[in-house]
Amino acid sequence: MNTHEKFYWLFGGVVAILCLASSIGWLLSLRVAGDGGRAVIDNLNARIRAWWGMAAVFAIAFVLGKNTTIVMFAFVSFFALLEFLTLTPTRFGDHRALSLSFFVLIPIQYWLIGIRWYELFTIFVPVYGFLLLPSLSVLAEDTEHFLERSAKIQWGVMIAVYCISHVPALMLLDIPGYEGQDALLLFYLVLVVQLSDVLQYVFGKLFGKTKIAPVVSPSKTVEGFVGGALSATAIGAAMWWITPFSPLQSAGMAFVIVLMGFLGGLVLSAVKRSLGAKDWGTMIQGHGGMMDRMDSISFAAPIFFHLTRYFFT
Amino acid sequence: MWLSQFLILLTRFLLGATPHWIGTGPKSVQRIYFANHTSHIDTMVLWWALPPDLRANTRPVAAADYWGGNRLKRYVVLQGLSAVLIDRQRNNPDDDPLAPLFQALDHGDSLIIFPEGTRKAQPLPDAFKSGLSHLAQRFPEVELVPVYLENLHRSLPKGSLFPVPLICTIRFGKPLTRIADEDKPAFLDRARNAVIGLAA
Image (cartoon, rainbow over all chains, first blue to last red):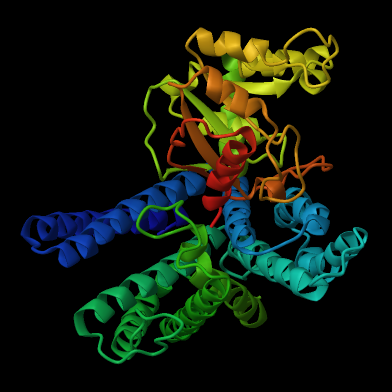
């Protein structure tokens, strides 16, 4: 099977799953009773509709090619950073640093992927961004909460720009015997993360009893995590044929993705709460904001990128 | 008008601005919307937050000394926003600076005004100038709707050239009730507190 055939099979599979999900959602909405149940089902259906949208955006990006995919993720970073900084208290003195993050850092970071300059891509935000952002803020001579403000901006940029940019950066990898198929690797990562989120949600709703971290994320349960993680790992292993991995390696990679995704969800939930909010935004109906959907990916992508690069190139 | 459409698109993209109708709904009655003023894009954002049918006869009030300054600015506010220009500096002391506003209200238009008179660095409004009270007295049947613009002082504060894209929220409060024989300072204070009350 060549890359295109694989892609059509995969996309057909996604469409089939979404059709199934939409039908189940529709049946549930006919049968549900009570306001509480109604709210859960409405939320579920809103989420399914949003997944249709995401799948459509992804399909278009894949069909239009590499550069479109890079630009698409640049916009994902843009909106994720927008949501992060909206909740982050900053002062007038940070204005230039904030403008720079949006209109200079994001374009350069993604441009570096486009021109395949890996060495600079990998240090651009953690070295140049790290040093230059507070240097811009300091010129405003406002020392009030200076460390806190700088640290929060760094954090937002690291998560929303640096970490998320590792998804399209998968296309930078030169894996022997896997030439021209790197878009499938990207698909694999996003699919495993999203399925893991969904399956944890489903297992949690069905069997969830023991809360893992009730303070940080009341909806995460041990049963949900174990059920979701195992099934997502199994699906990841079964997808080995679109990756450069063997089935066992694919299971290992999927497990790392699932674990990092879970940790990302927890950590960003704690960050969100410490900033005093429940959702990052309202951009994606049923899901909250862009960051609510990207939290797992932002943690999984850089680790998946580096493991793949270390072991397979 | 293409310019209005363009400005609206730009605002949506950079500011993901969301209107929240808290104390009132988007009704098509004659109104004066008054808000805190921290940014050049306040006018644009508030105007955008109104549904298109209300937007068509709601006119922002802009300072003639600033927006009338050159042809481009003049074109943008007059054509793009159908603004009413007000002579803040009273170049001709015999003219009533509020006359163009009276005219617009007589004509049945709604207005957007920033009663502090100028942009401030901090989000909560300073003392209001008396213009609002004159308008309120002369047009007792026009609804006075307080509006709080959140995050705009961070997005494009006074003295900065580039915007920071942030989610800006526009909160519409309950129209001020009219109290008979209320004196000017008390009225202005009440109006200002209505805006502050929406900040929390």
